[in-house]
Image (cartoon, rainbow, N blue to C red; front, side, top):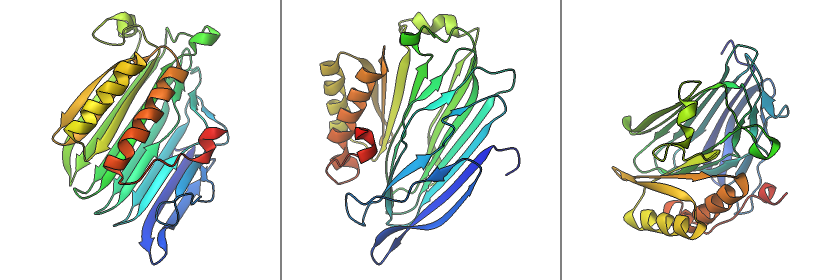
Length: 272
């Protein structure tokens, strides 16, 4: 597609020896590292690589990942995505994930950091078959408070959607700009927190919702969520990334057996 700084298109398929990369295309500075198999050939771990690490005015990233019938994959990345101060144009990021019948996908990226004055338009679109399994999250940091960057100006247009067999289950839009940023301290919105995350899983259950609530209470973080027609949604706020990441990893470890049907197996990149 014209107009993108970088593109990545990846498809996984089920073969005789397990899940494998069936198709890979990339343009510009988006790559994947060779798959790792800490869980055997059944479920490869794939790392998305964006060597620049950050995006600036006019950049565009287009990521498309498809998991074929009965195939599985865990996708993560070695570091955060940084949206730097804009000189006028917005950064565009589109991520489209598709999981076919019996397929399984974990989408576990690091956080997106919006620097002071950043302009970012980001969209995550997830398409699932009803018999697919999915666990994913999106994490946002408004500025870098420990460095004195509190994101007091900028423009963020963030959208997430999940559809099941073409039927929309979740569609939301978060807009931060000069008009809405003063509301960050509202108890009904951001509670003054700089970090936030949304966790999404299919299929969900009441037991998962209750366990997520218990973990949030024990962590002391502000969190809430529930089930939307069987889709598990969990939102959490924090004042710093260490507390938020600890909660997300605990939640993933607790819920992975329910969603994916496998014990936790952390990608080794998380330990570096």
